[in-house]
Image 1 (tube, rainbow, N blue to C red):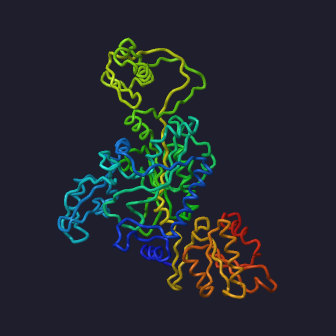
Image 2 (image 1 turned 180 degrees about the vertical axis):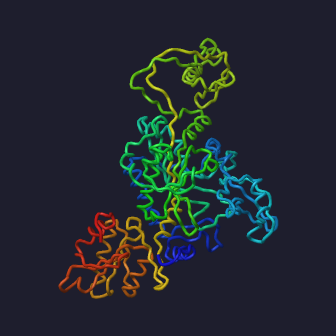
Image 3 (image 1 turned 45 degrees about the vertical axis):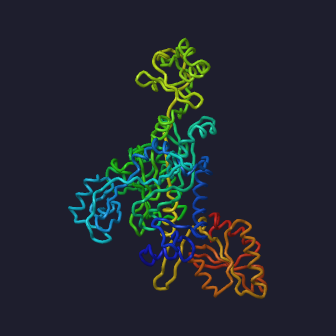
Length: 568
């Protein structure tokens, strides 16, 4: 790379060439919001295709698409209503809002763990003023990041735009569990929009109010944290930053598990899978590491969490989180919904043991509930005895919650043969920030030669928005017709191509290099006549090497180069 990356130069290129545009620009724009242009859509979609190829293809996970607007109950159960907040302060003079911990980041290694009082004290200690006008800063308060709405006209039912796609998977657990024939492990993927009302989004695409996520939720037996494909990757090297030392260390994935740095094989496998994904997309391995969250930094739902961090012009930046969420999500949704969100784990042989059961008092139920008595009794006797609180039991019959007093049932201990037991699955979650990955891939691919004033995006062929540029040497004498025929063959085969007949060949190469096109095909007069009749020139973006190939083989050769089955 010829010089240090300038994020503003890269964003300028993205805007000029149709990767990313500021949203609502004709109205002055909105901070933290961007639109994807034609090339941006193609690059983003290609990234998603690679992600799907790994998780849906190789791993065999299933995919769903859930609603973006969720009722309040979902996020009350998940903890987002109470916990999903950042700390905000306003300037007393100009009233500009600021995320409080960002104002002190140069003085603290981990400022986002500071309390409101500690942040206010830091403002005084370090003489921190308003970055906009130099005025004094006000008190620090919590600010919930979810966008709030109501569901239905004139409705009192509160809803929120989802801040993550994960909850749509958790609330569909029973449907997914049945679809998977009531077996674990169960892997589910989902991609889509998330929404966070960021206080003061900066750093371009790194912090956005409306963003794209690629999330994976893997439901596993809590007593079996092994993974069948772990032996295939246990000797692979990985750079880790454990929370015990906060210093980067190189080791094998197997060593990380053996030393207790990564808690279990499932989590370790998907940490390494994330490395495989990111490198395949074009992230520089030398600028990639995995940092473990500090204990006071851990999300409210996480038992353990590792961030895939890449080195950008902004510094080290998280682009993927791989979390062991334990049983938090299903436990909470079971509690708030009253539904059974467990897995029935069968024993190899039935075991005789004492169990507690709820026994209905049929003599009292009949007179009191008439025709409903039978259904209520069935609901009672299938309920968990632990759901009895203060001598009362609530059951749901035909959509109605019915409170039952202790005279209508009793909890008894019986001996019976048990074929298995119910357990709450634990969840391993690799959560990928698609927009951050998109930007990171571009920045790691960006190469500007200051001396030559020449820009190249060294995008991997698999993700490049345009795979092939097709040029006639001149737009006459049948060269253009031949070039268009080649272009149409490639396009029809699903190989994204671009026909360009204007300007010198050098300028056309430069235009393709600037948007990351890995290969260019040129139709010249030798294609139509001469010793090399029936051949065209193919050029490699990175080496600038050229060679002649038969027109009839163009599709096969390009396909093999893109897939990595052959080299230039």
